[in-house]
Amino acid sequence: MKIIHFTWSAQFGGISKIVIDLINWQNENDFRSELLLGKSSGELLSQEHLKKISFHEAKLKSGRHVSIRIISKIIKLFRQFDIIHIHDFNPLIAYCAARSKTPIIYTEHGNLGLERSLRFFEKINLKFQSVFINSYVESITYNSAFTKAESHRILQLKPKHEIIIANGVLAPRSISQGNLNGIFIIGAYGRLVSFKRFDRVIKALSLMTNKNSCKLIIAGDGPLLSTLQSQTEELGITSLVQFTGYDPNIERLQQSVNIHVVPSRSEPFGIVALECLATGKPVLVFPDGGGLIEIINGIATENICLDTEDLARKLDYFYENRSDLTKNSDSQLSYLNNFTINKMASKFSSIYLSSIRSSE
View 1: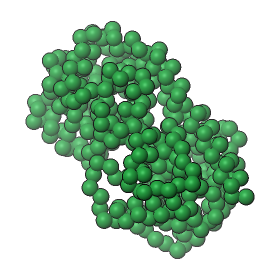
View 2: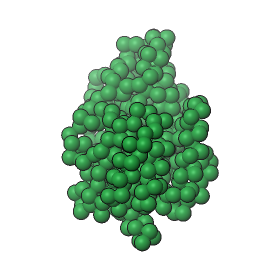
View 3: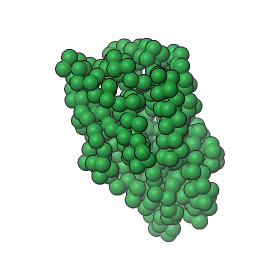
View 4: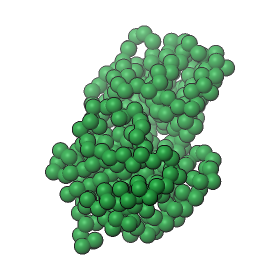
């Protein structure tokens, strides 16, 4: 079976990494899967696992870019495959997919503009997305119940077939407590954008009784870097917070810290939570975390923090009781069997086969 996946770019983040991992799994299991990038950019372009993939570049300059030459090229490309699997919405790509007559699977990863004001073009894009999914998509999948609910609310969906397929991870599983006696290291990871709410973990650090013996490491880059740096200055904790920027060896950092915080609000899924659970250490989240709550509810409801004050209290607890950091490690690692690439890919395979049969 020949499958082509579309995502906008190879930027560091959940969607691109999931798509690349899925393609690699499929190519190792008797599929021929390739990748179409809307824009030739992103940190993952230099990663070793992308070098194994056959990928094409639409070379679109923006989400509004229209080119007859590119349209003709992409329709011709799509017709070479049995399935088109779209992971990011783009009007030109959607038009090409519809014109190709190839069965279309659409995965909504939750990129719906949640937690921010949408520009006019983005609102129009959502209208196009709704029409495209309702009219041309054979099956739609969602990475969480939260994403499904938000998609129905925003897009007014009436799909033929829909299913929730949780993301799978390839995170290495190994238990490490981190430093048991010295500096207590708190890790937080992701793009520095508004809905990630890194301001909450910075505020919580400032409220800790034991803050002067702690170090908060925030790994990621983005437009809010200077804002977050200013917050640490205002709270007088600049020396306690380290911004590392994009870290291609994020797994090594996650292994080295004592505890993880994922402070996002309305996170569609939260694959970083799975990566952190794979270290066997606690992962602290907030009740408005969206898909994150679905993950943490299944293993450690006590690690859902009511607010920043509660997060500070829980961080102080684990600082003072470091032997508890890995008490649930074995159950965490077993729980991750629910979120494997194999399970995710197998469910997609069933959908592909069903879609091909329906189109015959």
